[in-house]
Image (tube, rainbow, N blue to C red; front, side):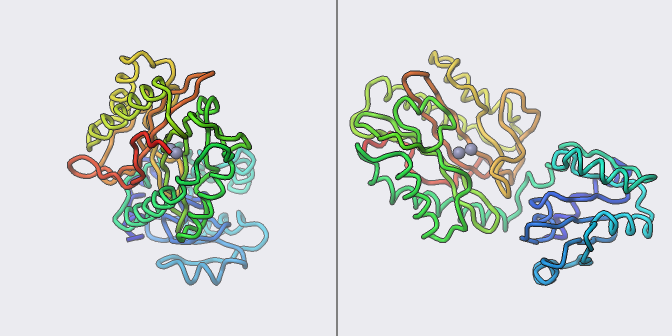
Length: 356
Ligand code: ZN
Ligand code: ZN
């Protein structure tokens, strides 16, 4: 499995005439080796893999990693990289520019004086785009866990409860059901606060008749889930019902349009044009969705500017919304796996306008 993942690097060696690729991003390192610790580097040549860590992680690495030479580095890891580059003639090394700080790059360039460091830009992000079966299993199980947790917490939404109490109850339930933690700080935005697409749970008290948007997810074995529901606390106003129904239809239309070969830009337009035609085009300011996996937001991006095209095995979110300042907002989000024929939705909380 992991060997297959590493073989995805082949095209980079050819395209960029590389002798090796250096990884320092822990998500990429986990993807390529299975290592789950918090500090490491990985150097991969055409026929060799070196895993570099400090003494805290040598034993863990030996347990988790196969088919790599585990090297314990001293205080300066780059000295080991320079020594390897010299010994094996690795004179052109690609690196993850999008995950490297300017100061780390400067340090590395000084050390590797005489070697070429090749900026791979965001191209390397592609290696994790299409999930393999084991990843789809992990993503499905964390999504299921998280959806069930929400379902059992919904009853706690009532007038007089504050947003942060809902977020805490949900986090507790997610942990109780076996998650390692939450995928991100939950959004619980009620009433007018719903107009903020990223309104984190506050101490605001939820009132009767208000919409409540809950964007939540769990983290397990390195993989994230992401889902959003907008429910009503008591009977919603007609305008709220109308907006919810528009967002729900935009969401459903986009999910029906998911298939290999559709561009992420065109998919975004499916939901966006529907919302625009209903007169709310100015109130949907963010992209339709994003890839999800070892990161909560990863490639591909679904937006009017995206150049990506969907492929079987990609796992993406579909999350249209309408946000009206002074009134509130609605977002509905599901996570789906792109299949050969269309897609399979792995999040399962009810997306109707629930009146609680
Ligand atoms: Zn979300
Ligand atoms: Zn999302």
